[in-house]
Image (spheres, rainbow, N blue to C red):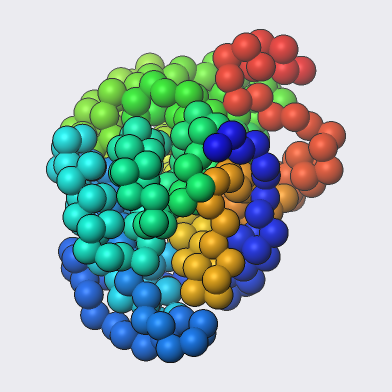
Length: 353
């Protein structure tokens, strides 16, 4: 089914409520089936499963955030939560299939790398319900799949504004995981934010070709810092942990901007902010909708700054002056009001003024 509908009302209303309520912390179990209770829709107990990509449940990034959404659902909705960690791409289809065949009420695939697997499993099991984060499946979304994507470029723009204002060398870096269109949204949104504030600043973008290689992230960060970049924004999953490690080793004046979750705790003295992507609240919202018989498959829900799907972390105030945060907020308002259209691709960035 072709689907270009944006912002399912049920999902976004629950998402907004979730943003106010906050989210729980991640657990450390895999295939955790504790917790019974009801969903609020009759007495039916739901089982909601999640399959991570190769980054794993403790990637300090979007897999972990998704798990936090299920932890919240476990506590507040009484679902039974199950999680399978994938160690290689070949694990995706078997892991998804095991939960679908095991009668999970909803099975999540976390990450765009799982797009083909989600579509294949969904088509083979039309009576099962699945969800995917970070992919619209090319617009061909089966009726039994809820797809959630984000306007990562909008949140990344704010990180560019921050980097441009805080950099003393006027040279900043970007470390991406794998060079796909999704990660390029972070890159070009970040570059646009830098350009908007300091057109003379130099932005160097490099890619690790992996989301689970901390040593590669550390090496790339070392090279960027060595060439004079004093701030690095990463969008590299667990690979980004290496960026934090390198900054901590170098000490004062070497800054990192995290991604997906608030990553301040990874390097409190070196973290300016994090571009948070509320995967947790999206997972919770769709799960809650399912319990209320409001599951909307066959369409994509797109979440940006306006919908509270992306933003900067609350801990930004720890190391960022108030006047810089005020500037970030002013740009945020302009984006929400449509005064600024943030580029998400190389071609769009070329035309950005």
